[in-house]
Structure formats: structure tokens, C-alpha cells
Image 1 (cartoon, rainbow, N blue to C red):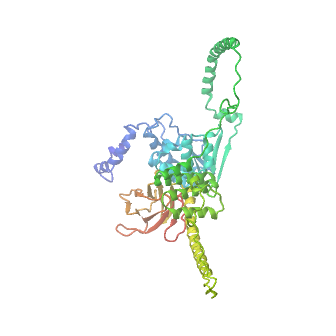
Image 2 (cartoon, one colour):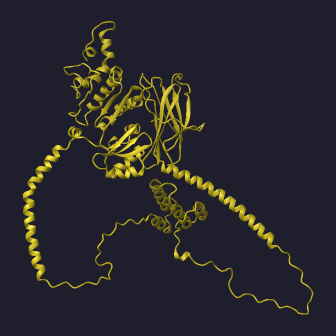
Amino acid sequence: MDALVSPQNGRWPAAKLAEWGEGAAIALSRYTEGSLRGLFDGPDAALPETDLPIITFDFSRLDRNSPAIPSLMAAVSCWAEHVWLPQSTAVHRHLVLEEAWQILLAPATAELIQRLLKNSRKLGLSLDVLMHTLSDLGNGRAQDLARLCEVAHVGRLGPDEAANVGALLGLPAWAVAEIPNLAPGQAVWKVGPHYIDIVETVLSDEEARLTDTSSRRRKAQQALAVDQEPAKALTKATETEEDSSRDAQREELPAPVEQDTNDQDADCDWEMPPNVIDTRHHDVIEAAKQGRCGEAAELAAIGERQDITTHGIHSDQALSWLSTGAKVADLCGSPDTATHLRATVTRMGKEVDWWTDEADASTPPAWHGGANPPAPATNPDDEQPSRPRRRTWPYVAAIAALTIAVGGVWQSAEDDQHDEERKERQTKAAAYKGRSGAALDIDGVDADVVARWTRDKSHVIVELRSYFDEDAKYLRIDASGKNASSQREDGWYPQTPEIKVPVKDPLADVTVRIAVGGKSWKEGSRAPFRTVRLSPTGTAFDAETGKQLPSDL
């Protein structure tokens, strides 16, 4: 600071040096004279050794909302990346972030941590992140870091938080349902993309002594229990006296009259089971009967998605929604759709409830009404044989059979097409993640395009990130008539362009055009581009070739 504020004449005049250093002096004055004074001007200015078994940076005495935390973490990250990792002789290193939400919520620090994560395999580094809940990370870039984790341990959480964690980490429905019921020491482990199980950690006595953080609470509970012992004894004595008084009163009462045991609702010796009747189908049909067809369709879609996630796409529970959809189509004036749905279920050999009312189960109507016409009178004197009638019924039958066959083939083809489309949508709904990303290499620049569907599934937010790639000069996104771009200015890396695109179908892919200016790009020229199709299931494809692109995670 002294050299910046009061420079000496040398190669350049002191006044010029002071002008050049003014911006840096203003930025650093916060750490020497302002609110962050004391962070870097301690008695020892040496850097920590790089080969110690454990190095701890303790931020516990700082306020959790202090701006010093991201500043210190930025300094620690730079030291770890440029000093500790290159100089340490250890084969494998661990960087542990305790109460990580305080660190990752700062955008600048999150970018540094993300860069360490992306290069962790090359650096021989494991990043261990600990926090109470993932909801503490908010809805920004910090949540994307959670998806980069190879190993996740999820302890006991509430149902709502368990659902959020399951959606973020891609956990199956059974694991999400078990998270609120986990015992101490148990956790849902996700290792890689496929291995998911419940693991219980068994501690030895020495490990329990080192990791026990509840000793103070147990001592307080034991002291409280000792204080409550006299009160319990007094209460027990009072209850004994009251019981004796009640027994004496019962002896003076007449014998009870025997009650009629034929009443099944009188006294039950068993505990009534909880109400587990599934009324979702009934609610959908009632909404359709009242003319609320849109609401009925939405309720049916929600129920179908829930049963597909819980029981599987080919389960009876999932297929039962086809019959409900057929009934809704009948009530809402779409008989063709109802016929297609019923044909699909029939072809799959499933017996389903068609929600048929008793009034619908009537006998087939008669072809005509009234008495049969009288037979024509015959003349016995007329012996002239009558002209034989032409037998046309075989032709009519053949034409009818041919018509039915052609109609059946057309109907079957159309049903197969609808069935395939429905299965594809059901598969997409079951694999829905609400996020997609692709790693691209355009003009020598490593860039990631990331799409995040909003919680109400009405919009998609698309970002183009180049992080700290030295060759990145220009970034641009185009989609649905919207665009955003950024360019390197005054030596600063281009900022991350972002657009928010409305969507009608939350399960449909989003196509974006990505332009990146790198080594060969010059200002005013056209940047190389690629067209990418992003799916809400987490995959991304090249829109021109159809090939799947590598994930950004």
C-alpha cells in the first residue's frame, strides 16, 4: 500500500506511478484500513508449509455473513491451486470444506471451487464438502456443484428436504422415501451414477470418543432427569391414592348390564387401519363429469407420473391411468382418443377398471320395434317357378370384411404410433431431471452450455460458460428469438451470457445455437457456432448429427 500510494521516482515519474496504482490501492485499502482490516497484516506473513499432515484454516470466529469469508476462501483456493498442489509430495490430497454453504454461496468462490472439481482427477485431489442441507445452496450455480460429486452421503432429513435432495442427485423413489427414517449412523450412499444403497457406519469406542459431539446435551439431560425424580415420586404417590379411591367407588356401584354383542360398531378389540383408499382416479372422473376437463387431464398426468416413478412404467398402477384417461376422453367429447387408449390396454393384455357405471351396463338395443310383418299370401294355381334371386350376400360380406380388415390395420398402426409416443413421454417423465448440459470444444475454447428448467416448468434458463479459459474472447447464445452475448474487455474474461426461454411442453427438448470466439476469432468477424439440443432428462445432442454430446458434469 505504501508503494502504491507514495511511490518513488524511478523509470517512471512518481506522479504517473501513483495514477497507475490508484485502482489497486482503493481495492486493497479495504484490507488494511477498512472493514476487513486484520486478515492479511498479521505478525507472520509466510505461507503455510505444503507437506504437513493436516492444515486447518479456522473461520469459526467470523460472522457467517461477513464478506471476509469469501475473501479468505478465495485466497485459500488460490494458495491450494498454485502452491499446495504443485509443491506437495503426497500421492493424494483432500481439501475439506466444512459448513460449505457459506463458501459456495459466493459466486466468485464457487467458480474457484468448480475449477478445482473439474481438474480434480488430474491434480490427484478429492474435495470433501459437508453441509446440513442442500437447500442452503439456493438456486444458483452452487447447486450445479452438488451434481459434480462422485460420492454422496445423505443422512436423515425431513420429507420435503429429502425430495429436493433426491431430485438434485437423481435418487430413486425408494431411497427418497427412506431418508426421513434413517437412524443415527445410517445414510443413503450414492457412488457413481448407478450404485445406491443404505449404509450404516459402525464406530469403535475410540472413534466414538473422538467424534462424539453430544456429550454436553447428554449431561444436561441427565441433570434434568435427576431433578425430575422427586417430582415423579410425588406424582406416583398421588396416582396411587387416586387409584385406591376409584377402586372403592367401583365396589359401591351395581353390576354392569351385559351389552348386545351383535352391534359390530360397538366395541372393537382391534385398531382400525389408517385410511389408505386411493381416490385419485375418482377425483379425476368427478372433475371430468363437472366439465373441468383441463383440470382432470392435469390430475391424471400427475397421478400417472407418480405411479410410473413408484411402480414402473409397465406396472398395473401406471396402466390403470389409461382406463381413467379413456373415461375422461368419453366425458369430454373425444371418443377417438378413448378408443385408442382402450385398444392400447387390450393389446397389452391387462385387465383394467373402465369406471363403468351401472347405468351403462344395459343390454344391447333391439334392431327394430313393433310386430313382425305378415307373410305374403301364395296362389296355389300359380305353378310358374319364381325367378331365383341373385345371391349378393357373399359379395357384401367380402366387402365388409375387407373394409373391417383395412380399418383394423389403419387403427392398429395409429394405435402403435400413439403407444410409442406415450411410452416415450412416460420414459421422459420418469427420467426428468430439470437440468441438462454439454461440454463443447469450439475454436479451441472449452465451454459448457447448461440449461435449467424452472420449478414451475414454464421457462428454461440457458447459460454458456467458459470459466477462465485464456482463449475465450466472445460468447453468444440464440434460442427462440432471444439472444445474449459477452466479449472480453480490458483483459477481463467474457462474462457468462444467459437467456430465459418460455416453454409450452416441459418434457420437450430445447434447441440453442452456441457461438464461441476463440483463437481464430477477431472482433467484427463471425464466430464458429454449433447447434445443440438439450433434453430435460440430462442428456444433450448435436442438433445436426444427432450424436450425444459429453455431459458438462
